[in-house]
Figure 1 (cartoon, helix red, strand yellow):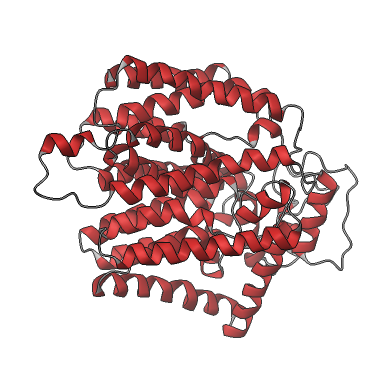
Figure 2: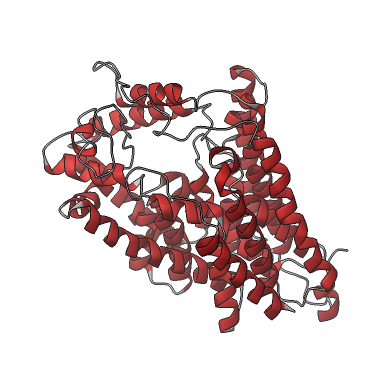
Amino acid sequence: MRSLALAGALVALGIAFFAVRPARTPGPVMRDFEAYYAAGSSRLAGDDPYSREIWRAERRVPGVIASRDELLPFAGPPFGLPLWEMLAQLDYAHATLVWGVVLALGFVTLGLGSLAIASGPIPPREWLAVLVLGGAFGPLTSGMALGQVAVVASAATVGTLLLLRLRNLLPAAFCASLAALQPNIGITLAAALRDRRTAIALGFAATIAVGGSALELGGFAPLLRYLALLGEHAGAERFIAIQTTPSAVARALGADERVAQTIAIALAVAVLVALVAQCLSRRYDQAGCVALACAAVPLALPFAHEHDFTIAFLPAVVCLRRASGAWRVWSVAATLAVAVDWLGLAQRPSGLPATLWLALAAALAAFALIPWNPRPLHLLALLAAPGAVALADALAVAHPLAVWPDALPRVFHAALTLAPAEVWRQEQLASGIARLDPVWGALRLVPLAGCAVLWSIASFSLRPRPANVPPAARASGPR
């Protein structure tokens, strides 16, 4: 039955990518990579990539409409600038090709690495199943399409765990520094601080990130100004529609700003307290602690886009492999809640057929990863996945969400005195993305709920089972 599920997942994924794939949106290839590439170009030209000067480089990227302001701010950590400078020495087409190879390696590392952390010996069939699941996992494929460093950071998080397991401290430290290229993902590795060796490796990575950033900026005072810039950028995006955070969701669902921020802060404190308690309890091994953090941290982040949920791929695979009894089916449901691009139903109505097939592919691949043979009744339940997508689409099509920068006026220009974060906010306002809509809030609530369920399942499934429990009883689990 699992082989049948995998075969069906392959067919569904093929249909999604080759038969019903929607037309590509206009603009540069790997739209978010534009900012990384422009930051490197700005640095090479002697400009400040954290200022409005980055637009001089961005406007030369193929596909950017230079007659209007469509500035995409760069907010990445300064220690990563040498990487972007190296890529900026190539023309944009060749730079995206090189970066695409890096992303592909990250995709494979994240998929197979997550499976290795979750399981013992792995048959080749399950290698294929986890890669198919990755191909249908919305945050991951979105990150790949946009050229997002979130994919590399998530893969580096998994790679760090594998290297720590092998006690390769120096490579682990280097890998952890790559995870820090996206700090809201790399922070999950703090849950691995369990022993002296790990502390040394992660401390070295932190030194690279902080010390390298200070060197790049010319001292610690400019580094503090950079941190203030991050606060400005987070403030500019706090409640806009592309933010998948508890505060943005609460605001869209009708809470005023103060209540929305209070909800977010209270939830973040509760999540962090619970995570610290879990990691200190010694009930979970090092990798288990990080898997718990990867599921829980999206509930506490003040800044998160859809591709940042790529980090939830690790706990999804862990839950699919390690959950028992009824938790297995809940693992599939939670994985789908995170895997489907729910907000994309409002942004790209023509993408519904592809989303339906991707949801089916993800569900079938998830069942193929569960270490048991599902019954026909379970596979019939897969119809609920495209059914839920179709129901959400029925709501979303009546509440269309614009796509930046396509919705910007052709003559949009921001005042030259404005900082990049404020220009970005003005662009979102002009595009209509800053508008509050309860349907958009509900769509973003689904992946957050999926992360909460994954965290709950992992909390039970990753605990060591008593040695005196018979094997048959261990496999049965809760019913």
